[in-house]
Image (cartoon, rainbow, N blue to C red; front, side, top):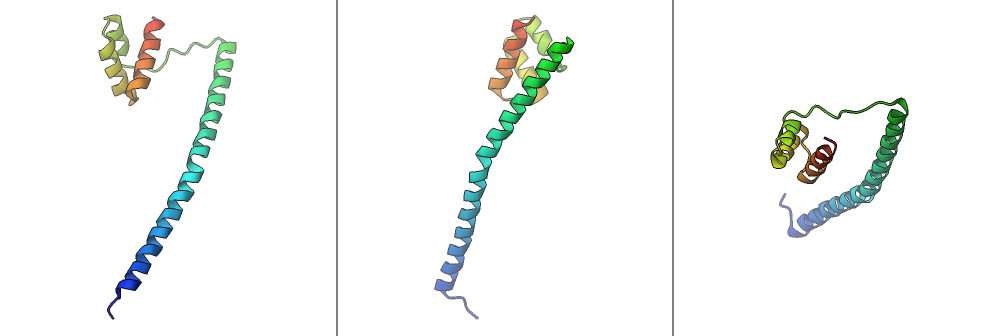
Length: 105
C-alpha cells in the first residue's frame, strides 16, 4: 500500500509539532528551576560559612596538586592550568580561584 505525499507531509508536520511542543515545555521549566536551585545553593553555602566561622573552622581548600607550588614560584598561568586539570573548572573560574589563592598566601 503506497503512502501518498499528503499523508507523509501530515506525518512530518505532526512529528515537528510534537518536537516543538516538547522543546517549549523543556525551556519553560529549565531556567526558573536552575535559578531557584542556584539561590538555594547560595543560601546553603552562606549558612555553612556562618557555622564554620562560629566554630572557628578554617577550610584549607581542596588538595590541588601543583597549584600552590606554581604560585610559590610565581607561575600563575601554570597554576591556573593545574587548577583546571585538578577540578575541571572553566578558565574564568580557575583564574578567579588561583588569584584568590595567591592573595591568601
